[in-house]
Picture 1 (cartoon, rainbow, N blue to C red):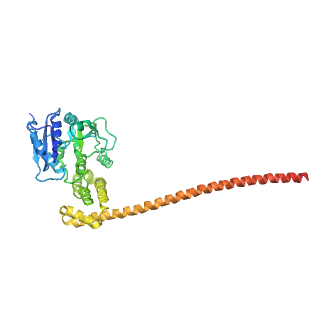
Picture 2 (cartoon, rainbow, N blue to C red):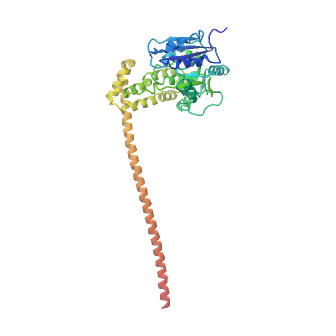
Picture 3 (tube, rainbow, N blue to C red):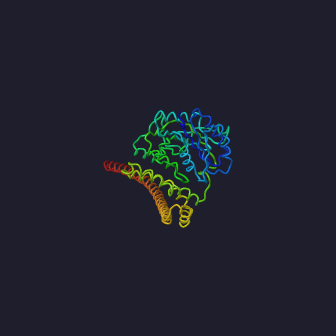
Length: 396
């Protein structure tokens, strides 16, 4: 008799007392019951843990509540701890404020088993807001922040051509959030695919790792996850320019090494360095662009100080150099933007001048046409007069 569950549900928990009960209820109501739940508390300051404790009897020994020693500030490290603590053949991530449909685990596990999949990736999901009845009334298929089309209409294996997979990464053909995927636990552990400890984009690194290593990556049209929109998300909180810089440059300085390490063990990237660079450039481009937008509100010395104070402890003896390089790049972007604005202003002036000249040409063309008509009429009249003169001479 099997003594390990088929599926481990990993749930990072931080101050979700309003939602964690509904989340656990949706897991209890699954049609597939061969699972365990590993909740990892990230030092909550509300009654979240008490709510989880109250559910332990309902799960009959299948619910574990673990604790981080200190708050990590994101779901990355709690998810990593959940991966280590889990025992299931497959891992499925469920955030503490979200729900899953009653047949979610049955659908996902059956697909994983029937197709011998390393990863089962749902291209669609549900979205809602509020709690209780309001949450049920607002339920709908998500239309925003999802992968670029087209979508599959039946279970479809992703190509094993890594060059094609990378091209799809560049063109946003994968939604990187972990809660749309059921993943083989062995795939994660054998290839050391964990979440880097960064403020944002940890999902990108983790998902790219799956794409680099998974042989059987299955896309499915199933929608089994229900995401709850909340107003207090990390992305939604208002930030100062300094906080925005720290937020967006965080994955550039602290996450890119994890991504490069994942690629360093793949033979394809050793023989195709252009793809390795393309992945790294794609990863940092958006984050650095957002960092630059925030830096416009600060003088260079303040931009430098912000990076050095926030990240200096992670950068070792190169803290000054890396902070200066980031400031220099930001300065170059400001210069480039100023030059581009001047070019755009010149181009706008040139377009207006061309438009004015085109109007003058039109006016001149009309005037020339009038002159030509006048000349033609004059020539006609002259011809008529010449005829009359000739007739008079003939009579003489």
